[in-house]
Image (cartoon, rainbow, N blue to C red; front, side, top):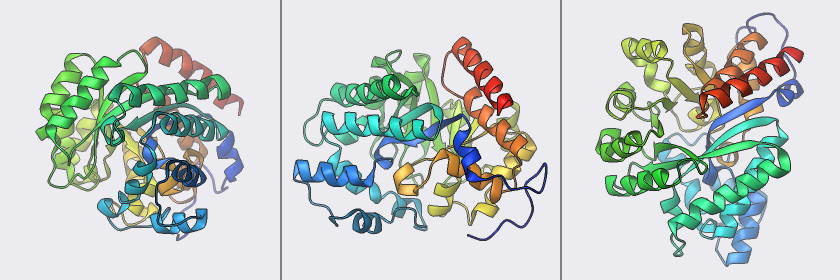
Length: 354
């Protein structure tokens, strides 16, 4: 990557990466099926008799193009064809959820919202209820063992069908207050507008369930407009192209609709040209509630600490800015108000101590 052309705000000193590891953090936009360990894929494939394009960690990483700039969202999503092959049993889902909690806790992520689409894990006949409960079991065990709090966001897939999205919305309703905190619409954006899935959003909103929608990544600001004004999104996933509509941008700002920014992923999918040209800094300077997330820890080859460090070293955010972005994450969590308030007090005190 090119070096940033201006020093971080608030001083000329660049803070070392270890400092970012020590900061308490959130990860509000992380996909379960894109955040496995490569070694786990190999072990699960061996146990299940699943054929992979390579039989070593290095070979599999190359085959899946992990951490590479793929040029488009569709190319980036091809890695999931491999991960989904080994995520068709309850034990596999429980294991990867547990390992994700362990990996996030290791870099001091305190709160995480893990998203995935249960319908993609039923190829071997696993009931949808078991798909949800296995992941919750893994995350709950991760909380017991590592202290990290995690909840689930269930996704509809925009390029499959509105009917399947409605089924996922029904599942979100069934598991409300049992570990599922929101509904999302993911998948290929172009030619699959969120308004086509309106019935699913009407169902979850009618049941007072939070909504976040992937928008403004591979398609223009009109997808963000639909996500907010038609589907009722409380947060927006990515939102890279929101900057193309200044009026909508100010609406998002005025209403404190959080943006789930995933900088490295956005470069790898071709949504932005480079980290230096990522709109996160612009959004932050204008006052938008930006949060920093991983998207897919394995596919993007990243962590929250790394993404925050890149925002510091490549986008010029000073440590005071980083502190505000971290607090934005906790403010934007899909948690009950009083629990969120208590959590924020603890995090503010801890950051002040650091």
